[in-house]
Image 1 (tube, rainbow, N blue to C red):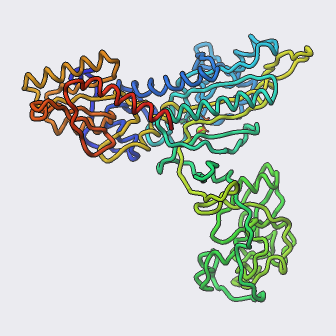
Image 2 (image 1 turned 60 degrees about the vertical axis):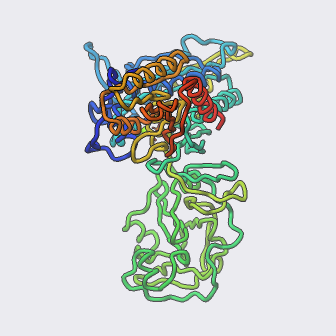
Image 3 (image 1 turned 135 degrees about the horizontal axis):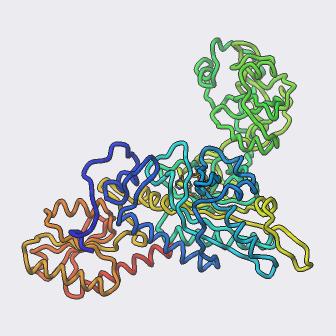
Length: 574
Ligand code: ATP
Ligand code: MG
């Protein structure tokens, strides 16, 4: 493509509402334009990136035995009523009526439609397994669309659905998708971690998110770089401690802490560290009060508490409720003498010398010994895992990361196939519900995540595998016939060799061309200047490197082609 004829409207200014790098550079680089909140058009460069990503996705899913289909974006309400989601799904679901008044939704995900497709055509165990995928525009009326493509309302997703005869067979489908996802994200040049995720309200028992590590990510994770274990902080296991996390012994002593309501206040008044204190939190689990103890500087993992209690409704007690349940004012609640169930975080087992509320207004205990002075119902892991603590699976240490969820694999069991009658006849002629899995990748979010991980102040640094063009050829003096001829020749030769090349033939100053090349982020740049050409050389520069190198003009096209191939191989080998 010649830049002079391309529709690549670059911008010098940072658009007002854009903060994160992917949003800023996609707008400035002429990749996307906003049409409405969370809704974007893709211009030619943006479209090229999406199709690169989609090609990788297609190749890997086809390799894993999945088959591509295309389902409608407009979904009749009946299907969603059958699964029960028409009633349950909140305002994220865009509902509309056709001219006859029939209800529809714009599909935010397609379990129902996929189930309907399969149940109509599949009768026997012999026809299974089936794994179908599509790449399609979804709509979710997100409460807070943000950061451009990162959280849009309309976005492109690859969604896949697997159908198997039983749990064991479904696990094989799950694992093959898991492996395909690893290859997809590696080939996209991303630094990512598959992390164990919460299965949430959908049920099922196995779920992994694929998280791209980036500071602008919304998800908090911990990962061990020694063994590769990674998890959302809410799911992450913590290592059992061999020594109590608070020590020091001493006698139980009541001390005045006037006005101290928070851990920080108590630390200030008593001149102790938060790691010497415990927080006593009152929760109600399905209406029943209980107390949770964690060290003052830790964060409670509510999901772990919910799992422990098995409660469907778990809330931090309101002030009045907490006082009523414990007989102590909030701010001075403590475990000594309480007759409620008390769940203490695992690391508190054997804790002595603790500072905790004394159950009276303006009073705390020092020297509390949990075993001696309290009745603990159970010690159990209840805190959020943090950076620096030991990995529970090996000798390594957790590192904290922020992540962008680019993909999700989920074992669904029979939660859709049962209510929707998606059954088959097993070998014995008995009707059974199919066991399902669902698998999503945010195609547009992958593009954004790749930029979050690969950019500098000047713009994007695309991984070669998903770049809109592999190389840009940049002639510096547009009035020099020899130089133009050399650029033209190289451009033609590269095209002949199957390279995706952008020739910047605009009548612009070199500075402007360099700026745009950096902004757009094409991984390889070939500069043709009068002086070096006189010496028989071109200049070759990788976008991610600071220095350029000389490249003999003779045989340049072949040399560039093999440099691109080597770079692609390097990425795929990760
Ligand atoms: P999130 O927690 O980010 O809202 P989700 O759990 O709702 O994601 P899924 O329903 O599993 O997402 O969708 C599959 C994939 O689609 C996600 O892994 C993500 O990459 C992508 N995705 C989901 N919502 C959006 C969105 N609003 N904008 C862009 N991509 C999205
Ligand atoms: Mg969501």
